[in-house]
Amino acid sequence: MHTFRVPLFAVLAIANILPLSAQHNSSLYSPITTGTSLEVTADPLVSRPHTKHCEVTLLTNQAFADFSNKNFNFTPPEDCRGPWAKVIFTADFSIQPGVQFDRTGLVFLGNVNIYFGTTAEPLQNQTDTWHVERDLTDYSSLFRTPQTGYASLGNIVGEDGLTAIIFGSFKLEFYQADFVNPAPRPADLVLPLPDNGNGSVALNDASPELTQTFTLPTNVESAYLDVLAQSQNEEEQWFLCLPNNVASELGVCGNTDFRQVNISIDGKPAGVAPVFPWIYTGGVDPGLWIPIPGVQTLNLLPYRVDLTPFAGILSNGQTHTIGVTVYNAFEYFSTVATLLVYQDHGRSQITGAVTEDTLADPNPAVVNNVSVNSSGIGGGSVTVTSAQNFTIAGYVDTSHGRVSTKVDGKTNFSNTQTVTSTATTFGQSVLQTSTVVEKTTTQEGILSTTKENDVSYPFTISYLETLESNGNIGQVTTVDQKFQRSETDTLEGFPIFHSGVSNEVSSGDTATFVASPTGFSLGPNSGQSSKQTYVYKDSLGICYSRQLAASDNVLNTVTDGQGCPYP
Image 1 (cartoon, rainbow, N blue to C red):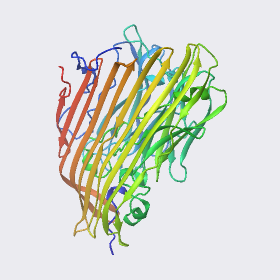
Image 2: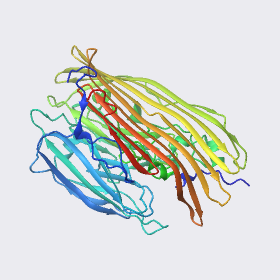
Image 3: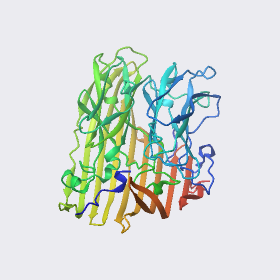
Image 4: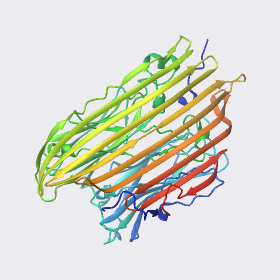
């Protein structure tokens, strides 16, 4: 009887587009030492202005060894009352040497999520450490009054051989504005979904939607939703899920390998967000991610959905419900969202309407050529594609005249997967592309401005598990993740700002998982290599480039500036 068919890890300012004056911004580079196995990324630091700043500590060296929330109180800094040119969240983590799973960490302030990430798995002989940052300047109004908050990082110690405690220190940095560094306009209201103090919401087949009902001010001029959906449990690697008719035979997750976040207002489609194929430090093969983790693994970034065409409706004084669903969610997605509201300070009541909304639910096409027998032996390929084109438009009559907003969106998703299953082997290979292109056109009087945001997630993965004669499992894996974003602002058709970022991690490893009475543990690995390349450029002359390379789980080289052509 064939029983070896379950993937092991399923258990475990006007400017030219690019001026010749582009230079490195040295303040974005964190110090990195080669020859280490400590978790490290090529991601830049958040840029900081050279102004007076204050720090507020939320928690210091807080131990996480259970599933209880760690509470804190926040008071705005007396010496930095604002306005603020920048507000930055920082976190410094460590994990003791030993045995532990990767864990999900979240920090909330006033029920608003200000950090969402996963942790490194422990090293055997030294404490692993890492640092993350998030720019929260748009959330500045949240920090003007005292608030309570908490950190949530569930971690088990002392059971099932798990030994490592995780520690975290969290701060907020506030940088005063001045003439050279003016404060950007933050959201007037920063509103959490959910607003019940229970943290993230699990979205799956049984509980498909996160909703929150608001009665908003009657002068909403624009609105946005920051949303983040993190795959968990059986569909942690959702990009390897299969159609239900073969998924159960192979012991993998179902509902195909297409996921997408859908946003609604009062039950009507209002926006979409892609789901990033994150892989956590315990995912697929933990040896892949020492010392370089996957893209955004330690610091999951939300996607911002423009809801401004609905501003007129949201201002009508009635209650409105914002809904978030993950299309095809299986089990499960941990989901948070934050509503950002900008008000018209020149008028207490504005009116408006939605004039067009062609967004509908996705209708993915599935071509399934995978077949297996009752013992799970077989294979084949399956392709899932989804494409949507939509327009959402509306207007508001404000104190400075009528403002019309039109969002033209286009999404494209494709996942081609090959499956192999024999009596002693199981493997899957995926070639996936996911893009979201949104162009927002704003008409105010005779002036027309556009903002185009192009995001793509090219992704490939291939692994093959082989059952060895001694009961161990050998696994050969390669992974390539890439996050790309391009943003362009134009005024009357003339480009006034452009930025682009590319963040790619490529990893490969040959590992052995050792059989024991309680399951499998990671044994020796060989041939491990990984590389991360991060490049950012914008039309204001900022350029950041860093490349990391590692082999045999040790960081070998750090190359800065190679992607910046103008030294």
